[in-house]
Image 1 (tube, rainbow, N blue to C red):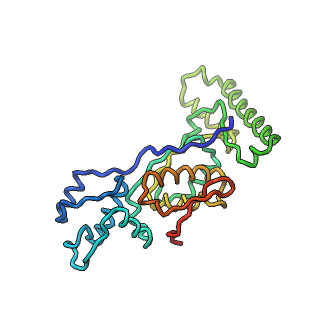
Image 2: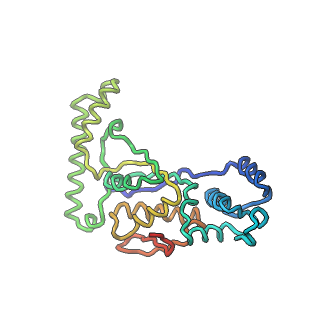
Image 3: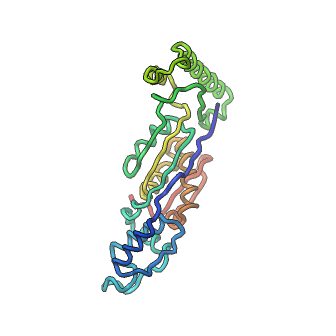
Length: 259
């Protein structure tokens, strides 16, 4: 069945308030607070201010003024390109019903990421869901070819399962061996799930790289959804992004990109 990929934000960095208070006490600024709306925004500010002891004007004699808000502070970091400070906050996503075309593209982004993918060595296929690119969707004959092919490949998975009587055995090692063999005739376009975690610096980079009109269509679709989440969830970290529609999909850009 033709389906559309979905994106879920399932976790993100949180502050240990007791530890942060102890750290601020140690520095001598126990009353310092951040007006950042999320823990990731506040953590970014804390790590950045710690580099210069800029929690106020009393800790560092070289400082005569400081930016008073989380918004102003993070905006300055992004404008200057101080990307390392953005690496402390981590976001945890799950991409569901994405193809292995997508996951093969995603794994190219290794720096600052962690991935956990559904294993077709263990997960036996029965029905096959898939995403049809726009050029296929717009051609009824092409859609017919897609549907017939995927239905046939799903039938082969079920035929092999019956041949080896996998539903009649409790031998998990045997099931695993046969399931691993069966996946070799599974199409690269089948829908699967992958967990993806990344730091904010990486997230900004991948959004810019993978919503561009030159990126593969499905990954553009997925990361336009990621970008929408990021802009709404962490506004101070992504407020410099501008969205335009190119070839029917969102394209996120910022003048603060450092090449």
